[in-house]
Length: 318
Length: 287
Image 1 (cartoon, rainbow over the protein chains, first blue to last red):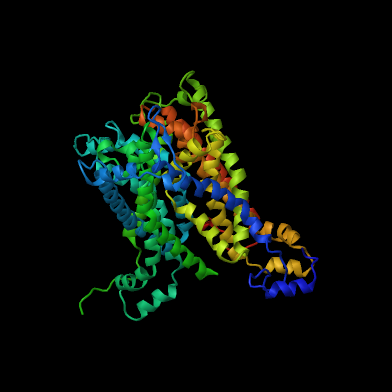
Image 2: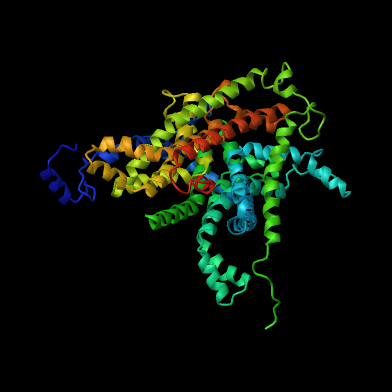
């Protein structure tokens, strides 16, 4: 590759496809794409193709005898019967799917807001006031990432048992034991908060840490009180991180089913539970596919927003 | 103008209390769960004395003697090691390629990879399950192979993001200098870029390993027979039924192995980026 002469480099330099580096080193056109190719092929087969299979299953049929899904791969044979039936379960009749959907929206919004309030306070303290203990606090903040989500929720499941420590603690104040795990929304919402709040804290910390101290000092010099400085300097500067954090935290919550499985009951089921139940049941393959499609549509806007925001941030760095 | 003069440099006791309160709330429940793996009785919520029965002494229910838990432990590590083996090289190469490749297909590839990072896991899990169960049912069966395929797909974006960030901060100057001094592009890559990337690659290995040990959404959908279920799935099934402290012990095994790998990765990361400034916890954390 490097032996090719200068004439080739000249031709390469004038070609519109930009095959040469700015310094004039000549790479063949396939050089860098060949690095990307293995990963791209992998993504194509195991990430993009499965979505097409989901469409084919959702718009396919079910074997009448064995009740396994029969996917239909040709778009012109797609049948939207199951999909519209699934949609109707949200709106007509006794809309059995509508309650989980609304519940999910409420839980996700509530949990995200709580994550933001607590997370912002913790991130702010760590970024600005932690001093010598910052390294230790950071390690403790990152630790939950390395502890299995399952273990953390399981730990709470143990504490919230009728004979668990939470009820023991309440017993000190004379309160009767509470059935925390019998389908209480507050349990599920706090479980979601507990599970996902680390995802909120680290981006907020990264943003607050990078705020130029001289801006804050300028605010003080111009007569702003600490609260005013926070409201008019820090808060606006951290707005991108707040929005990004809310999205990072809420996206997995939309597909969460295991938190409710371990901490809640049928009465607090979420959208993820609908999908999980449909996948397990024979004859409900197309329905599971339809629900996955609906979930994709619901999360599409926050996902695209997040991708655009990170791309802008990355471009700002280069 | 009312207002009472408050010292703007006073210690923020309120925020400090919230922060340490949060840290306790975050860590203590897990610590309690670990301690309960040494419970003498069957309860995971009432302490009944100290015992090693769930770890090794109970001939039937301890994780050492229970064959299903032993198999699950080996399956967990088998999946993690295999996933790291595939995901880190693929992701690293992808990052190097995307960093230098320009144009529309590159932007699309970048987008596809980041898309796989933000998509909720249940969507990926169900899609892969439908793929293996229907389209590829003659080639791949549900089981270890399918689990590895799913895990690699899910983890691919982590090495990509980490290595890409590192590449952005390295810049092209070192390779260009090497090639000015006469190295071929391959040599420049191998002898200049790769050593510079090494800390990021190590960090990816640690992260992918830890994440795979803990993963259960994708793995559960792609599991075949019972022996292919790793510890995470076994813990999930047990937690929904009637768990004994053996579950706590199994979870502690996962926890300890993850921490060992992360610590090892952190130590090696420090060693390899010793010469550079800013190789502190903050850097490692923000990767």
